[in-house]
Length: 218
Image 1: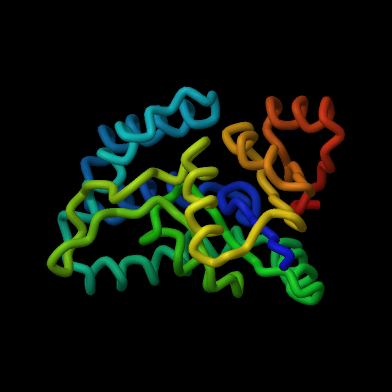
Image 2: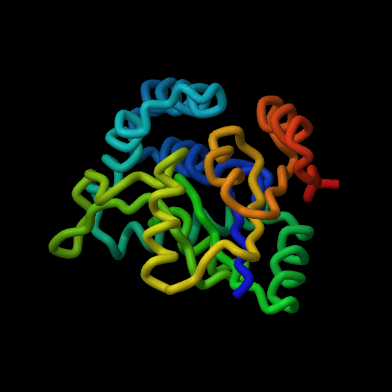
């Protein structure tokens, strides 16, 4: 069975859904604007630098989910999709996903961003299966905590291996598309690693290892 794995932020999207969700919360007046933006910017720069403390970030980013009921959050997300996400869904990303589907590959999105933010985005891309960081959900509310292993760096490898064990699939014919050096551990596992509009560190690594480098933005 072929598997086509896709990172989401800055790969299929021309932007970062996690960062944009934070900006959206600020615009809606749901968080302290100046303080939240300062921290949101700091965490995003640390992510790009490869120095992000994922647990510190998740304590920050999941807290607003715990402050509202699920029905309100879902309505809020619908607005977020229309205003922030659909404009940055890359047309070439849809084409790439469909090409793999026509070749009978199972499409899978894997992302460090939490499932609440990303699952509707995956569905909008026509991808039913997503592995994401899981926000804890108890008694019909988010708690603000993370459940299980965050889907970040080596955590992506661990979460993917869990999924492979559950489904009985393997990586014998597999692709992974990503923009970020944070995904080098997983890119190194598949037999078709592809750097997509890569950051500088990933571009250098991809060139050194003979990996394909493509753009979905041009």
